[in-house]
Length: 392
Ligand code: TGC
Ligand code: FAD
Image 1 (cartoon, helix red, strand yellow):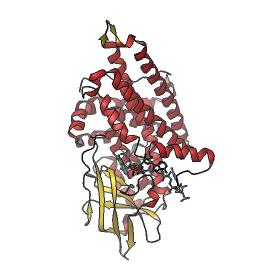
Image 2 (spheres, rainbow, N blue to C red):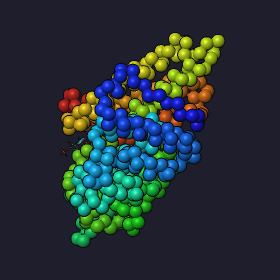
Image 3 (cartoon, rainbow, N blue to C red):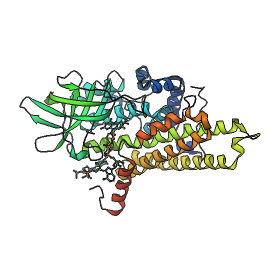
Image 4 (cartoon, rainbow, N blue to C red):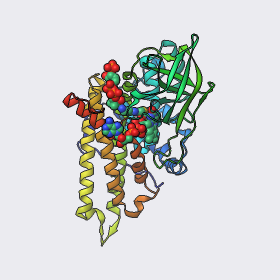
């Protein structure tokens, strides 16, 4: 890929709303992405390989469990910092942000919130340093938007649990050392369990032929009479609300991340439009191209404001799940729209790996589907404002 000339747009001077620490954290992540992600990401995506060599660097910039307290190896940062790190990483690639979101919000978060002290001591420091990696199994072949219908079950066998079932579309599954998975007990109540690679009957086949999120490894989790030690259950919370709380944290990070992808597309398109000449003029001089660019920066600015406010609410423990849904839905849709418009500004060059835009566009097709589809988040807003659930 060409040299990384990224300059972050800040049309409404939102930097004034950030603390020095926020800017420092963001700058470390931004520089790291320029140095370590940009040079390798295009080839990784083309070859559909997860670039494992970046894990150490992700840990060093505090991307694994930014909000986890330092006593468990986390960076002990606030939610605004978490969001800014996700923004910068997704500016590089949504697949890398996926790996990071899963590790932080879907693996470390449930262990921290619902785990025993022994589980926290055992897993969190190693997850924070990237020594071990995790994945999160909620979706099943027959239950995506409706996780409450899950069929994966565990039985109490006295000295252990016996786990059977399958999860599908699981980010990090092919290489994860542990899986935080959600299964029903004999009474039909959902609980979280920690499954470790190497347990008999546990396998993680990789999902191939993706056109999207190619630099992220996706797979299945298959449980065939897996014996789970009783100490591996997460005792702090049961019911579907437990995995959904994890999703709230991840969806919040995605709301920020999508802005990163949008900023990269906008910045690339703006630079290209000023440099590319047709009919004796830079294409940026044509009203049609200016309309696209002006609308992009308007939408990015609106998303930045929405998300900054969400960060403030999240820091104050006042952000509701429905507010998070609104931001995830709006920002991912905004980013996908900008990616499509930006690609057109680049003409034929837009379809090549010389520029990041097409990769962002393809990635965002997954981002708009996972962690709750575009439709599901709309229904969550609908339920919130009317009081009537329209899912069923
Ligand atoms: P419903 O009856 O409404 O709720 C069941 C219980 O959960 C509580 N709850 C929540 N709690 C916290 N946060 C939320 N966002 C919550 N939403 C609901 C609710 O209060 C209730 O609690 P209780 O105590 O009364 O039992 O559930 P439902 O079965 O009607 O489903 C509602 C629905 C459709 C909104 C929900 O299930 C949903 O969000 N579906 C989308 C599924 C989804 O997002 N899957 C994501 C899988 S993980 C993933 O995609 C990772 S990608 C990672 C990456 O690579 O970045
Ligand atoms: P479905 O639920 O079958 O939905 C299909 C269509 O029907 C969608 O357009 C949807 O909006 C619509 N629909 C469904 N229900 C309704 C309704 N009530 N009203 C109106 N429309 C409706 N899951 C994990 O657990 N862990 C992971 O790490 C993970 N990583 C992923 C990585 C990738 C690359 C992808 C693509 C997915 C990942 N997922 C993961 C799964 C993801 O969360 C699901 O794909 C998502 O929740 C949607 O489920 P589904 O694909 O089964 O679609």
